[in-house]
Image 1 (cartoon, one colour):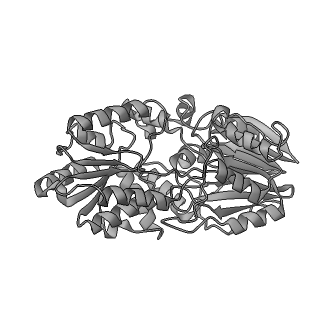
Image 2 (image 1 turned 135 degrees about the vertical axis):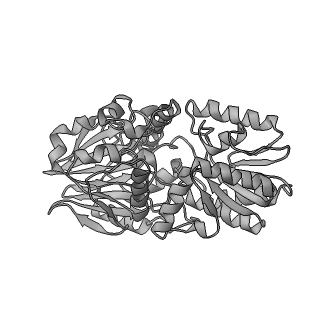
Image 3 (image 1 turned 120 degrees about the vertical axis):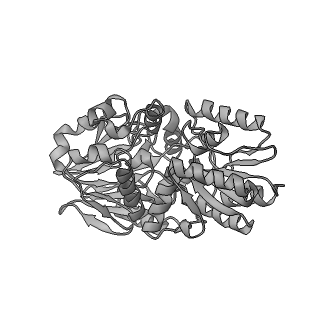
Length: 445
């Protein structure tokens, strides 16, 4: 018998966490933040480092792992799929409740380590950078393997929990990108080998399951960005771009194109520093050789003053703030909290999409309205997603042929496109397709 407890991420987007139990062995998969809860709290002046675990659970910011009380002593590993905070952000708060090591790819562990140091947090759990393709034994009956996949941050992985009843394949987050800008193509060969071994259940990222598409490659976003930078009249104008700081491939494109334009490339923001430093530390990519990275507020202010003096037209600025966050660099530039003045015909490139929740939508609308008042040219949605669409999900199901499917990465109304697709492919809702909620348990085998 295999028992699965979906601890978090099934009533909302975020707070991702799953527990898999077989015999006397439990493996925890991800421990993520509910990002909007954290943003709201910090915008009100709070510091997450000062919160207790109970307070974090009470404000719905981390998974409520009290449902695992009876499994607590059997947890043998905490396995992290990738470096996004909705998958690793709760580790500093919850991991110490379990006497188990934390495993993830080298980049994932490097980001986690820097995040904890920046927030003056620590855990007693050993941190183990683990490369994909390696199977780690938990007991004589259970082992864990990280399988390389593509997403919007480097060294993302599926987690395969090998049991006597079959493989539990934790497939979040992913896209099937055959032309990645950084890193390798998805390890499709290994996924097909797992099919042959027998996949008991597939947890599948279903965020875009209602989109009738295959999500385009990052190579497409690179060409979109290239077209904006080289196909528009921007000589003598400031160019400011923003994207998710974890999106190293996008930052690589900004860097290469900025240098080709003859502009000095500057990254501004603490999150930019955190991810670029982590990427350099583990050998993913060292953008710092070609870019000046400025993290802390006083240094950002000093740098922008220098840019104003030397001429913004000589720089390509990439900063945090694509969601319109009040404390991010872009908004503070716009409000002139920092010494920078947007001028008529300057360019602002939003190389991300707005996460469609409040207050993101309202904040982004406000920042675009204010930029237009300055006469700024706005380029929105210069971006492709890191999440697979319906046709990526179809291919993943075909190549792994799971006995059971568990749609994940959001509540039912968001992820039920995977259930509709699975029915087309011969599965049945409630029989071998399972819609889960936070704290619910499923028994298989």
